[in-house]
Length: 94
Image 1 (cartoon, rainbow, N blue to C red):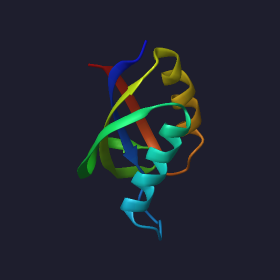
Image 2 (image 1 turned 30 degrees about the horizontal axis):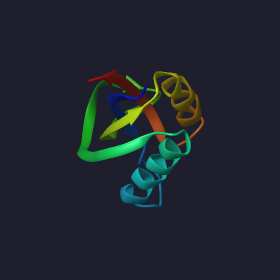
Image 3 (image 1 turned 90 degrees about the vertical axis):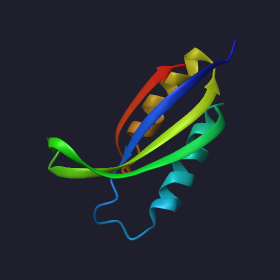
């Protein structure tokens, strides 16, 4: 049974030649490849971290609203952790 989720993904845009839009769409495609149905994507924007994280001081926050099976979240987390663009990710059920 599919449930609604919200995922906050922090992208590492520092030193990247591609645009943030390209990174957002690539992450969305990776999510859809795991069986996720994207409903809405909100760009929160670039924010400074409270403390330095992996030698980075800021990241570009994106909020993904989607519907997925609960088992897909672990697969999604593993798949996105392999992407260089994804710095942090957090998911919660709505």
